[in-house]
Image 1: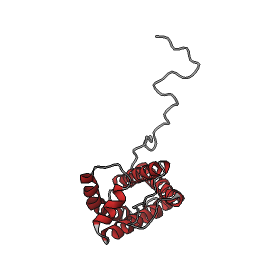
Image 2: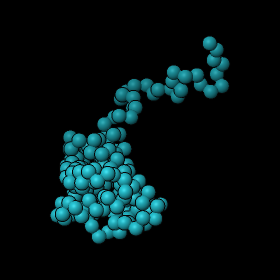
Image 3: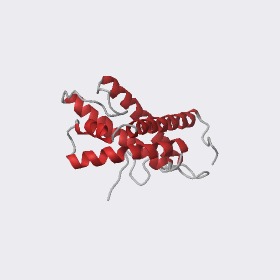
Image 4: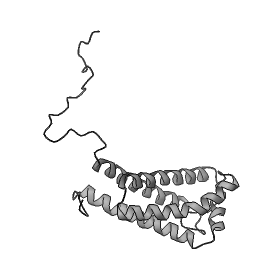
Amino acid sequence: MTFLSNKTPAGVAALVLRIVLGVIFVYAAWVKLHEPWAMFAIAIDSYQILPQWAVELVARILPWGELVLGFLLIAGVWRSVSTAAASLLLVVFLSLMVRAMAKGMQIECGCFGSGEPLSWITLMRDGALLAGSLFVTVMAFRGRGLWFRPPRGAPPVPVGYGAPSPGSAHTE
């Protein structure tokens, strides 16, 4: 496989977005790992979702997971898995942020360490990251042929294959 095997505009956009997402995940992890883990635990706890033991576990493990995920995205290794994991993680993050905003919670985001309040700007930023991640994920799976495509040279599959066509007289 070459560095840029899909030279279409969508393929180039997916490559650039994947690398940008990877850099963002690495940066987010780096910031959290350079602060005491308890600072991140406070941000996690403020969402009022997890019991204390889980807050501590997530605060210690999540930055390392983000770091590994970021490097996988940058390297393009396990592309389908890494892009899907990034999308899933961003769905969880955005959902928790929307929940907190809907409840009127005045808390820190926790996205890039301590000191960043949860706001509409953080919601828009994470929404944009999720949109980009979903695009990259679709492109990663599409490139692997996981959506149905007939083999080269095969006749096209008729619409409604295996089912009666609309308006046909189908009797049993």
